[in-house]
Length: 116
Image (cartoon, rainbow, N blue to C red; front, side, top):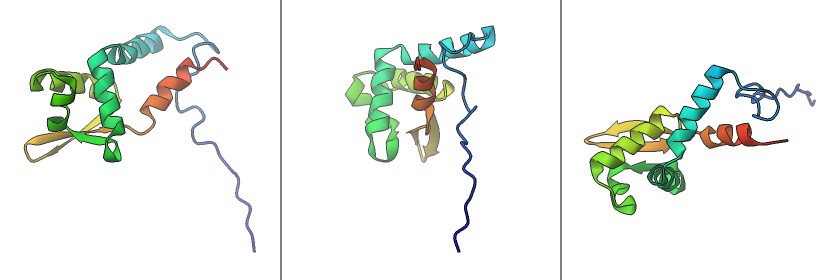
């Protein structure tokens, strides 16, 4: 016997409306500006890209220093900014920190910028 289940869109209302559908409130604009500022740095964009392209969308901070050509403290600072903005999650394993892309984080930003 086949049972028909109602389909519910669990993504509806999970994020802000598109910028072109309705005006942002002051609080939404502040939050979005902070989020976009986190992406508005070439080193952070590279770090985010490297983490996202890594196996399991996760990378050790030790593997991120050489590709961007920055010191470990500078890389850690950029990773902290990306984590605070909600793009990465951090987990500690021994003495190293591992960063993982937050599922859907980039999708949420792209949905805000979609005009249709």
